[in-house]
Image (cartoon, rainbow, N blue to C red):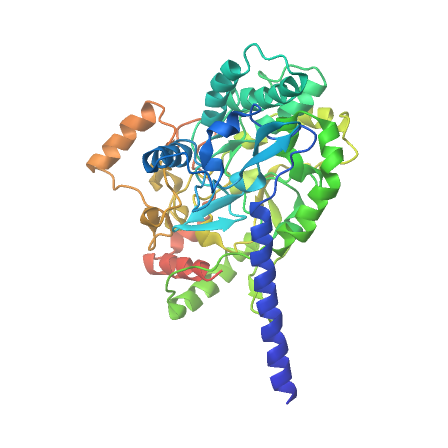
Length: 468
């Protein structure tokens, strides 16, 4: 009888945990931090003309809707869902409609055709979005005199101009420049930033497991402390260009992190898994890979147990170090800023990158902090043998998912498609990831033990990783 009650209890708890995660993800879809005219905004009333913001608007023809979707999804990298553009909102403010960018625009993405709140957006192109927004908003704001309009116009133009700044913005679709966050502290200190800040391009990180990750630090380099919630506001900070904005929404931000994001569970692999092969892969993983990434276990409820991840020194992992440049001057500015009390830093003798827990790793391609490796299989190859070109357009759709290699499909060397990739990459096409670009190197994360793996062992480890 006790055993039956225990099983019922565990089943109920498990169901509740799943339901809590799903509810949290729904709340996250509606989350933005627009406040008193501040936030990630576009010029007032422009959103009236982007009718795809509204589910019920019937003014657009089917052709117009298709064009909007194609532009928003394939050019700018937004995720267009059945009833909305993920992360785009229309907020009312002093008689105006204000287009606002919310969290899930970047921290929501697709994998194998499934949209997952909390997964990094694989295709967002903030540089392209910013460049177009600068032109449109500049024309839209000509000869305006309404002070409320001008207030938001200033915020919107600041957001667009920094996003579009060719000296520091991303060079490829699917990467975001951490450099943009740094600009706030340089501007506040009245120090020019353009010659001091590297692009620091990274893929948008996933959010499940954040509670434990914060103990090591925020962002890929973990240089920003998780001691308080403030750093989760980094992108909003440069967009609104206001320390007052951070302080005003800090309670809402704290609630979002601790009562929404902390409830996220990782997505299960949606296809078949060879259980026997996965067991062999687990043994191989636990013997070598777990030294950095940790042993992965589930609780009695069947859900992942997260552990505080390790920071691996750059001389060990040897991946692209562009993200780590310019730290010392930036740190001094942060600690002298008007919000140094809510933005703490980690000071370490050695710099490196976080080796995260690998729950939901099947969905987190392309791999490494700079998204330079398209599949899990490529990650086990010597860097010189890894794919140098791959297309990021519609990267989360099911037809782009490679079920064998786990990650983003790409053409074989010598094929016509591959030659087209080479030409597009060398001409600067933003949707083609090219590992010779600044901050795009696919070097590193290759260790001695990997050289001894057979093909069968590599595929066994991959099979195990599917189960996480």
